[in-house]
Length: 298
Image (cartoon, rainbow, N blue to C red):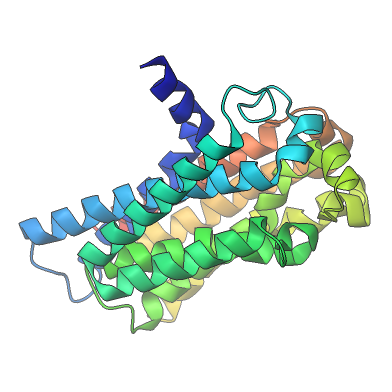
């Protein structure tokens, strides 16, 4: 049991909740979107399977990333399970492979659209971490490689558990999350500068400096959420217009506060693995997921 506990902690369980919640939110959003679907056990099962798939796929991604970041983590995070020797690289590869396979099988059990989104996310995850591409080295390209699968495709995949993805609505919702992550994902890069630099990863803080990088990503905490009231006025988003509009402006105000934290003292971002801005990023993600689910149910 202690070995299983180590494996679970290696997967960074806290990070598994946002994608699982994202899939549930995406499914509920599709259920409540016009025309509203009729409740059925198969819908509940599809959403539940999609949620499990997203959590396992994220766990596989975490394992793969830690394998290829081993030399970086020896510098930045020597306490983690691979660099500290608590688990071996072979064990990490087995965990990653098993989780990737299981998650894709589960996606296939939902439907082919869900499987397609999960397969694309798997490929992009590999491109981010592994050579020869290893887009983690390539500044803004790294952010794009994260934002598409974990932002855009996650919401579209959740939607696919209930309705077809061949309409504008799920893609606009995914764009909100994708644009947010395009900037917000860099919050983790500030504390990793030493190891990333030693291993040739030109993240935004390394390429442009801490202060300039903070300003570059600040707007992504604010403006993506304004797409919510815009989508309402254009008739693309069919959830409760008042909830979506008020929440969009409220999230933008929250993002303005986080942006102020980023640019006020950007050097503080380099001193902690879990800086307050990084925590706000996860809280904003989960809050937005809940808001969309509520807006399409009321």
